[in-house]
Amino acid sequence: MTNKLQTDKCAGKHLVLLSGPMGSGHVRAAEAIRAWAAEHYPDLKVTHINVADYFSYFVRQIYDNYYIKLINIFPSVWRYVYRKTDTPPSKSKFEIFLKWVRRKTARKMIKQLKKLEADFIICTHFLPAEMLDPLKKNGKITIPVSSVITDFDLHWIYVRPHLDHFFVASEEVAFCLSQRGIPKEKIHFTGIPIFPAFSKKYDQDKLREEFWLRHDKLTFLMMTGGAGVGPIHKIASYLLANSSNIQIIGMAGRNEEILSSLQKLAAEYPNRILPVAFTKKMAQYLAACDIVVTKPGGISVSESIAMGKPVIIMNPIAGHEERNSDYLLEESVALKAYDEASLLHKYKVFLRESKQLEFMREAVRKIRKPKAGLEILKIGIGDINEEK
Image (tube, rainbow, N blue to C red):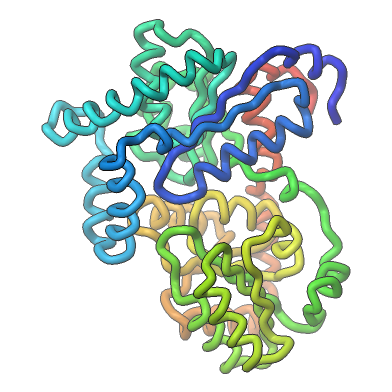
């Protein structure tokens, strides 16, 4: 709960959150930190800026359109780009071009930051962190600037030595950051920031009654990210046709086409699938399920793990999500399915080996970080002595 010390400490202070393009996860991470601030630091002014708002039309197209096309149509090309850029800064022509683009974008962003008169900055995307690092080095920015790494693996693009704090999702990322020259005192193993709703406890039986779900069926929650959307209706249809003991919560998000296909499937399989459009009750739907089927995006996986749910990974984006998959498999909190038949086999394993699901649940409990957003906020604004 909020106390007077917190209120006095933050009165008149201004936190600026900087997110960016390429998927919705970075934006959701920033909004999660804002939500924790609203609960625990009501006198702290918080502004969230997506740096993509300061891109030229040409640069915006590169991030918004070409990225999506690459990961969906030419994943091998994107995998090559991801690995090729995962190296220390160089003086290659490509790196020089990227620096030019960043400088052009940074000028507009820095002007806005000066107007806002921020006291603290927390970046949930690599672009603003990259832009601010040289300004910290040259003393043009003296306020604390922090970087949140929203995956379970480290890419060199996040290694910005002049920033004040780095928030990471695994001990391995923390170790790799230190090996790449970041002082250990700057590195904090907090987890990935998610909304406060995912730190609360829910009654699964009551939620299943509320959502008209059966109590006696293994419940899959199926969701996909904003990019690299997989054939969720096809996968759901296959599961429903091949097992009578499954029920599905199908998360369509803002995709009307997917929602329509799931609704048609619900008519074909009454009381077996619950289509859900974009919702603010994601935590409750997660609490109602047994297993999550998802792409391994850092935010969606962190939400699932925070709610104590094992994960079955499908359709990872080349590069960072493939590396996320490796981490989750190593930690025994996830299995990986390559298609519908593979997913059905995983389900049959759960039925045949009841200890498998409980083993994964226990592994999830060991690594969950439901209050990562609050911890990041405390350190980012210098309130690290507050009792937890």
